[in-house]
Length: 251
Ligand code: 13P
Image 1 (tube, rainbow, N blue to C red):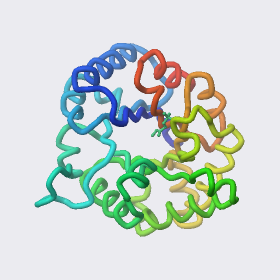
Image 2: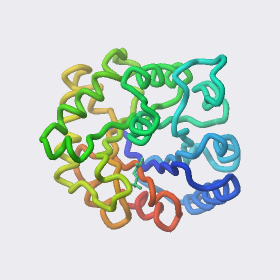
Image 3: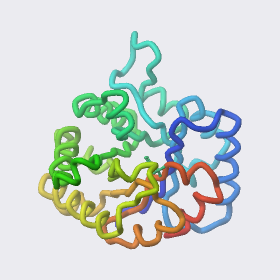
């Protein structure tokens, strides 16, 4: 049975004190509570160590939102996968559309990042998704397929089985416009199919594929009820426990 996961992506929000307070509030809200999914929070780099120290990381996995495509060395301002892992973080969000679009992360760069994350025992949450024009031109399946194949299909079966995917249609991110449950299911089933052809059904049955894009307390239940939607990657609605908790409880 693949894992259900609700992951928050704080993006570039919350200073250290605010982030720590949010993490601790979530930790307290989850204490003694039986939830039916894994919970992850993706914080800015500088929060990782403090957050990982302050919460029960068995209950809440900590994720970075990026890592370098190089192992170490003279890369001023970069943060390596090894450094991320040394904070106590267990996950790293890679290939987010904001990184692809604003920081020009190519499929080749992302491939390196995935390898380094895996080498350092981090679970990549690998994001894929089409922009509006691509969907309107009916190219969304091709786009998503090529994002997956270009960055992940050189992985061994064993390495691939450690990846979590997140389908985030770019037109749904931060727009308040969610994919319908049917659109999400259709794409998730397509992704699972594409992956199955390469890695076999057994591996892919265990691959979690999350949905992201204006997911909130009111639409989470319907989105998560789809057989191929294994949870969510949540932006805006992860910035407050009052909004994030009901999404976790949608499972
Ligand atoms: P929103 O939930 O704010 O639309 O963001 C989704 C996202 O980009 C998560 O990575």
